[in-house]
Image 1: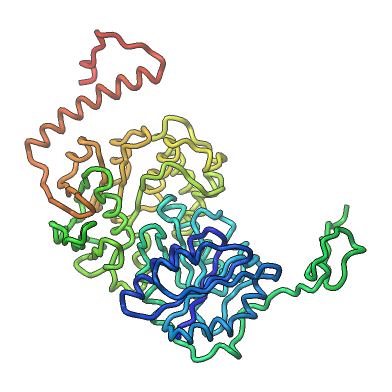
Image 2 (image 1 turned 135 degrees about the vertical axis):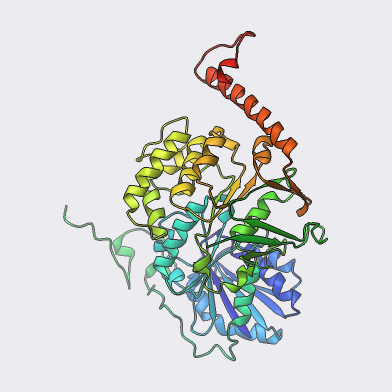
Length: 230
Length: 260
């Protein structure tokens, strides 16, 4: 089974890009399943359901979504195998910009859009820099010059990735993404594979439900802002 | 060196093969794309801009010098071969005009990016009614200023063998001056337009219908004579436009004869 991890900032067009790409996979008679990891609420499963494929949703709720994601990879893999899937699309959302969901051996796709601001490629850090494929969306609403400048910014952060442009509205470019997915190597298990970027430590009183403000309520791994010399 | 590009027909919105099965455009030619709104004009130039290889909704394939674009495996080779002025009237990037032009020149690995950025600004100011300052934020430029800057950028920074223009007539910039300024000698120019003058200025025009290339027409000698009349009318309308813009009034005795 090919285990494909899709990440990207909110509203970048992850689901739209993947729905078009999955349509191409289904046309080739492949068995595809999709799983969406989100924080509190998602409606993206409805879009995947319209394709008539098995869909699973995981909501991290009171947990850090990144840790929730990593802790469930094995179960998600098993779910895909139970459905005899040939391609599993795992879409993540809610990742803070410190984390990256990429796993060694799994094709990792980062979707980012042309409207997201010139500094976004630098800001989202490891999510972009550890991706194998960067998909840039919403190119139809900006000038060619802006597309070129934005693409260069992306390539500065991740010079090794293949950069594709996909139009999430009409699917232009999604056939190329499908070909890349089919050229990726299937995996036979996910246990023992490694995250490409470690996740941040998060063991403080707020992790366990504390809501009060002030140092006297804080315990554990607490880091304070340095304001420099005043 | 690009001597020609060919559009190998795909399918229209109903999945029916396009009536025009192959459209070859030679260097030095201006091709107009005409048709009602929604007929697929912008999609046609988007296919060329992306060097489509059967993967777009139209399933068209673009050949460069008779070789399918898909066979150029290193896609960096194809980058920069087509310059496009799309229908966009606004920028979204949060940068000053100067920084943006500089970064764009750098992204194309051009020499002396700072000088080039200055030249683009000078040229944009010739096309634009309102002056553009190098310290202006891109996002606050008016439609006309943005459009003028996009055209100037295509002329000087994205200088490419294939030029794609989507409704150049929008935004009130001088479209004929813009077209001339794009240094179109020996380039392949594809021009989407609703403007009869621009359509007749082209050597040929492809007529779009329901997402497909429906017919191909070579501009006749008679049409070129009509074009001359249109150009005369255009000078009259430009004259009136300038008068109104400057706050003058127009009476029934206005005479455009001095323009001829």
